Length: 164
Image 1: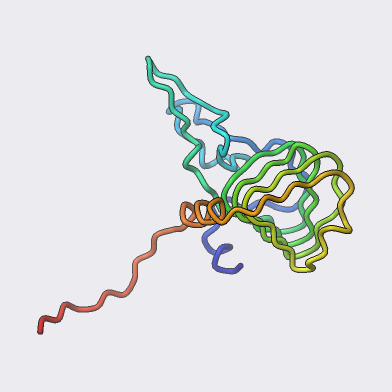
Image 2: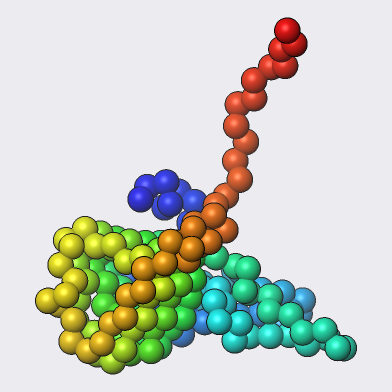
């Protein structure tokens, strides 16, 4: 958990988030990675067309999102790794592809929420707490893709060359 936190691209305070979705830089039309509500584009919903070429700039953006308190989400979409230091409540229309780790409890949420990958809770009390529909589709591929694309390259200590 701490290793992920140290590599987080997005750090936000706890609270209610209702606008997490892909975002483009208005000048360059590249994925706007400075926007804290941009959690990637798992469904290729945001495109940019130049001439006859259409691209999906945020499709390859898998942020590590660290929430420093409890989080309530409604109607958001994202991919990558979502870390919640407090409790987590997912409301209707929420979709997340990748790994979600919650240090607190998973709380009641209305509507339908969809998780593709993995959802972990420190209290391990998920089933009894939901009011609404939650779909958790475990996918090792979604987790592997999110984690490997969220990784930050760091230099390692190199070994000197030795010839025998």
